[in-house]
Length: 598
Image (cartoon, rainbow, N blue to C red; front, top):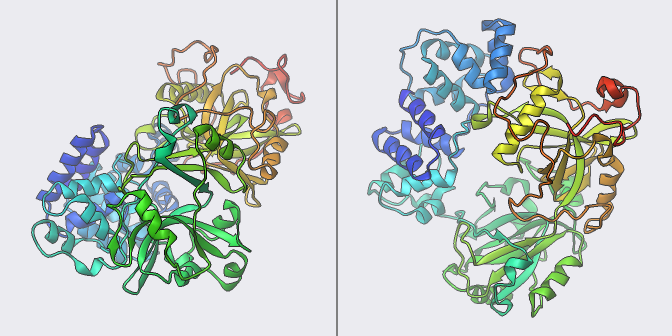
């Protein structure tokens, strides 16, 4: 465990990609089986253990620590496992292998798990305690993706990254056969049937960038609003993978049954009724299920819309240009009416394609895909062969309501923000966002939260409703699970509106109206929310006090904190109850009522 703890700590504080690879490679070369296999599975997210929940850890904290000490420490550290590891008073000095830790977590019953974990923590030092808790919870947060970890394997010699990834999803921890193969042993053939192969990804683009390219050298097709999948039927074995390689076959037996072909196809998983593609909200009812009943199969029938082919009838097509792969697909028989081929769009100029994108024939189309006609199928995200030109994001101006401490490198900042819209005189939470802002903007937001806290709920703070956030998102659906009645897709903060009074933020009915206008981007429903990549529209207005945000938290409110408190269930805020004293009891404030931008 000491070696694993040292690896996690060094990876967390090493920003360089190559340095991370070197650290991991050295660890794998020096660590024996099966320890290195279990550790590697933890790093890639493939170690499936009995889940150690935050509530279990909080229970241990209640038994061991003073409530106020733990609350203050947790508020400062921002990470539950790290707080416990630092506060825990143990003997230290004992040794525990990663394998023994895994076996303990796998075999201990639910009732005995708290005592078993406490016993381990008693014997370990602080760094090893943290590594053990990270292993137990599965929340490593060290800035290492599964693909980058497998790159370190490839650098050890023997098989390359593409070969490893092709067999990866047929392998299980502790990967003894994989490491033997890397060190010169036989290829693990039992993992080779119906494997996942790395998918080819696109890069965002816009009309200005496209004008530099020759439209005659490119093909285009609609980008359907489902989830990207790889459907593999190989030697009688059928598997449906998400684009990250997760096997989701169990949730879609209807699709598996329809895969009457021999090949590996790249496409979009959608719900279809009478030939029409249903909304993403319908598809969500089928996702993240271990199984599906007859009623759901009947009411939400799934199907595939095929974009590309990696393998077909024993032939590897990835080294062929797109036009040749497309010809194979057009001549193919997929064996079921649940599976069809995405059609190509007819255009001569980029302006022609822009006109098609602006007026798609179906509400569930979220843009266009553009591919070089001579492009090979290359796993990863190569720059240039494929582009996605999504429809412009929708935008609403919302009011910041709650903020939660981040994790890992963000553990010192409030970085997860809940925002709401006006419903009468009440602010109703409609979403949560934790990206879209720069590091500088994160510091500004963190300072605002600390200086405008009205209540505390453990790691969550309620703030005075005075800051407007421009929130961009991809779509909105009706939702009975949310108090607001709506659910936003992929919300992110696109701009901080220091210049706008909270009373002028949008109303809930504005967002609800977008449910029935899936492709409307007029001023009233989207307010020209066109931005590309990380480009920001920044008004000249600066946060209060200027741009100097170096002294974070200097004037924090002395609100009380509950030890181990959970996040609030996003209650609505009434102007009469929650607005600052200067405007308490008024209606939604206009420009003259609000006490400045923040």
